[in-house]
Every structure is written in C-alpha cells, then in structure tokens.
Length: 157
Ligand code: MN
Image (cartoon, rainbow, N blue to C red):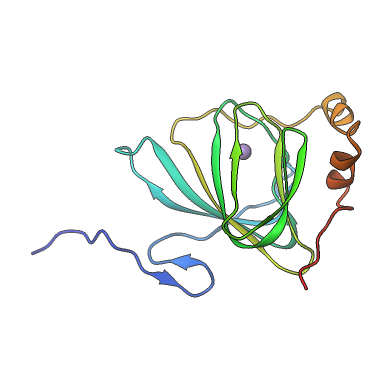
C-alpha cells in the first residue's frame, strides 16, 4: 500500500507535521507585529483554507478590511479584538465572525501569545488598509482609539 497519509500530527509549540511555519516579514506594506502564519488546510476540493495565526506577547495583526469574510476561533491565550467598531477581550475557544468589509484587528496580551484558527475563501480579494481619514473616523469611538493606541492591553495573571 503506497498512498499518502491523511493524518498530520501535532508538534510542541502549536506546530504541525508538514506545515511550514511562516513568520510574517515586515516589508513596510502593512503594519503588524510579531505574527506568524501556518496554513493547515489548503485543498481545492474545499473552496476554503484553514490557517493558524499566532502573535507573540504584545503582537498584533494588521488593521484591515476586505470583501471576503473570516470565521475565527481563538485557540491559545488571550487578547483583544476589534470588529466593525466593537472592541472585546477574547480568550481560548471564543468565536469571532468577521463579515465582509468590516475593519478588524487582533492584539495579544502584553505577557502571553494569542493564537487563532481562521477560515477563509481560497479565492479572495486583497485586504485594504485604512486611509488617514478612515482611521480618524474610527477614532471617534474612544474604545477604538484606546485599542488602536495599544492602551487597552489586558495582562494575564
Ligand atoms: Mn482579514
């Protein structure tokens, strides 16, 4: 019997057999900090991909929006998320829906990582970043302004 296995075992540190670990390179095109990506499932038969993102303590994802949606489950740690002007603490196993064209960003707590599973369409548009005007409009909400400034960081006991 010589056929590929359909099983890939978990490894220490939230890694998986045969899954490349891809730290995001800061090339100046988008603001983010200390985040890595692993594509767990990418199969044309599915029409979607399932990825695992992880931010180191104090790290954050890019503030962005796009036509495609995300389905997110927090897998590790605690942090804060913003979706469409709503700022909420998130913890392991929380679910976050990110509809089309909503601004979203994740931040890890300042002393622990934040990891989440993210489902997304295989065929998707590129994320858009906020213009200076859009950023100012978002900041009219004081919670959002505090989040964007990193003033809402939660510390895990
Ligand atoms: Mn996104």
